[in-house]
Image 1: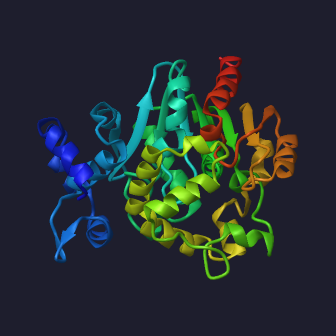
Image 2: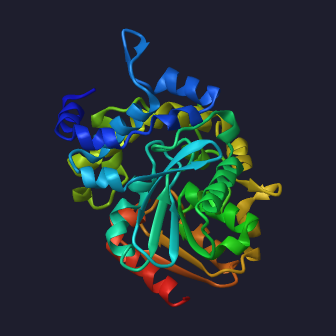
Image 3: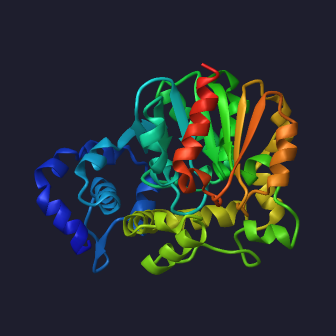
Length: 355
């Protein structure tokens, strides 16, 4: 445990220990516990010295630092036997936002910057997809895209949410499309955010190699503070947004789920064919079914984004029944982080017009 985490713990011991519920440790099945034991729980001289409750709190403190109020605002709910983490803010119509699929992704990293704006108008909920952030992965049964989508449906049902606006960034665009097809009565409005996975098949070689995870593509590197900062700078248009705090939070999340994320990507996306199969729905890439959407669809894309081609977005847009396409400038792949205020305004205007 770093000095930084230890110091914050010692300053807030009574408050932090009041948040532990050790009964939740027994909700983890054998495979899940063994995964935690092997890869996540802290060891000293090879011996595990913490419980799952301690690990989750350790990571939360590492992410939020001395901001104990923010730690307290994080929420957990039991979904299909998994202690599922999400962040929530605001009141009103429910707006559920799903993050992308890169290692280190989670609800907060995806949408934390938008919360101050969106929570003024909506009840905003951003869960950590299974295997991401503080929602632990169980194993191969959760690797496939449709399995992640099914888990999120169970999350929505457990939360008793209905008639929601549902948004997804990058791989999250596939996930929200899957949910909209499987449970159309749950979704009032759909929001697609720079989503290659949700709008077009992975292109063939050589272009498609940048999207797969294997010998010909790329793997998640072992995280360090340095490469975490470099990757954030590379993927961010407005470099001033890459603060020391954001680097530290991302680094802590990467350490938590990098191994599981790598295993999942190797299992589902080692080849272009395999990757497209992971993004299929009823035997075809999920984008082939977009004309069936009856709900309004908002598409937000950025001009400087290399992860989801604007021409493909236009083709997808033209197949939709009721849609708007907004193109924002001065933003890369994570448009909702680069232009959090403007993006939130676009979303708010779209949803308010359909209340």
